[in-house]
Amino acid sequence: MSGGNLDAGTLDVAPAQASSLRMVASLGTAGALAGLLIVVVFTVTLAPIEAHKAEVLKRAVSEVLNDPASYETLYATPQDVFEAPPAGGAERNAEKIYVGLDAKGRATGVGVKAAAAGFQDVITLIYGFDPTTGKLLGMKVLESKETPGLGDKIEKDLSFVAQFRGATPPLQAVKRVTGAPGEIDAITGATISSRAVVRIINESLERLRTPIEAHFEETSP
Image (cartoon, rainbow, N blue to C red; front, side, top):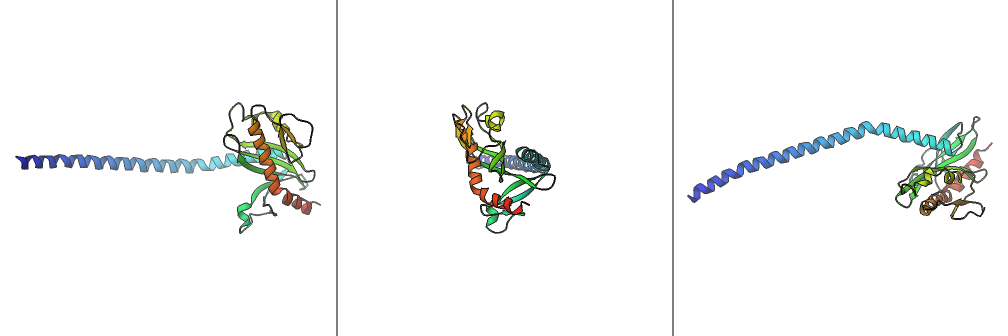
């Protein structure tokens, strides 16, 4: 009797094992199909996403450089400005800059993209700088996840954004403007985000201002 019972139990295990194998196979197939679908969607949408980002950046460059006739892309490090990405160790420190040109091909200013931590997450912005006057031409936030209704005013509050046009760096975010050069009136309720924007621009210029100004002097007619 015991031998018969053992054989029956053994027979019961076989269908269970087969069922488990089928389930594992089904899950594996579903996972593979899901992975393939993700790859296909990523491949199909990558080009439009990149094209959209490029268009947004193009409009932002024109905005912070006051609509130049055209602009060219250069590469800046804390030591120099290059027409192409520099090789060697300098390549890691190179940042794209956008030099605005008038109808006669003369440089009118430079747009610099910069990013650093804000209150909630990284703030990415672009600002225009005129090396001949030492003043800013404008500022535009490109990406931000600051608090809706408060921190996001750094891109939506037009009066705050307008302050950067004509401001003389280094900048300082203050709660009460006294008229001193470089003062930026911080947004009430979003002081940290306001100061983050000011800090991003100051730190960027601290790295790149000297080589940018030297490049403008060399290329000016």
